[in-house]
Length: 449
Image (cartoon, rainbow, N blue to C red; front, side, top):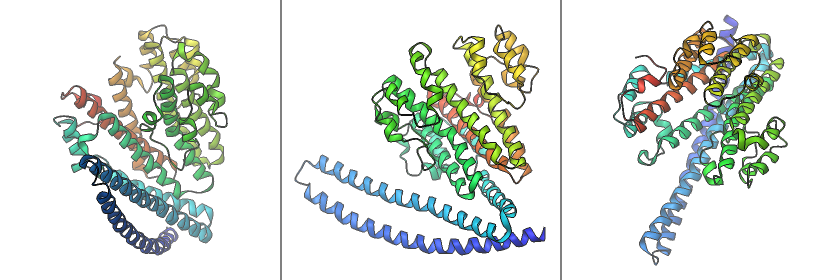
């Protein structure tokens, strides 16, 4: 124990030294940014004067456009610096730890640093009184105001004009922020651990791929699709520009040829007009789980076990949703339902999954599932209630794991899932306020007040 305390102290000294250097660089960067702002202000003034001969309205719009463009450039510089500085600190820190005490001790300190970061981030999540304010808000705009003024989402929303944000845009803003949080954890790891974080990110890349496929299928423009993407980042394996430039869905699929997705979905395109996108989207989810399973063999026993459990829980819930929706909304055959389920679940055996797939009707489905750990979720045959109870189940599971404060990937995965649930709760509240304006939002969130 004394050795670990000593290690923590030494590690903190190294970290502080690195951070001191970065602060100096940050001051230098801020000085350069201020100089750029001054130069651009002069340039903007000159351009404004030059175009005053044109109609006043046109001149004003041009000036605003130039100003916005320069501010976006500054914001990009600052964000890039913040992202890089975190990575520099953590990578140098881990190299020092590994060189002084070896990889095993480095892993202990590595997860200690991750858990410390998670504790800080979890402390920023919504409290019950903040949920209460959101649930009792007077409408969509009131929800936005509360988020911006009374919660940590104020940092996320500060650059946006609330009067110009709609429900769909808010959801995109929230999920882009979620992806940025996810990406920051990559800098804490190296080797196979780092590779695993990248594989976890595939879940969000797949969500973007679904958006692109759906957009091309229904004929949306490149710009329309691009505005709704959430995961475009340094962790992406996709060439977004190349895919977005595809003239139609067939070209898009061919352009996926060098990716892990192509073989699994190429043959599903021919039946898309008859079967829709449901099968393709389910197959993409299957790819994510399969890829995670393949990578587990490179991790230590403790991490393999905890990841298997968490991924198994996600697989169980996805299987149940797939079977329920497939039977209720798409009238899929039992054989097809079973063929598209995910293997190696947490609480549901392959035999139990098969029974659910081959249930003759909703009543038989509920009779089978009521005797499982997930019976509570499907007590009521109502989609929104099922989604709410699913989030409640996950919240209990991941919340319990976070309290254990173990030195493994379970902490990070639990936090990321809890944060995802929080965003879904916010979206549910917003949907109720935006479309129904009632006070029944409590029926659709995973929090008890």
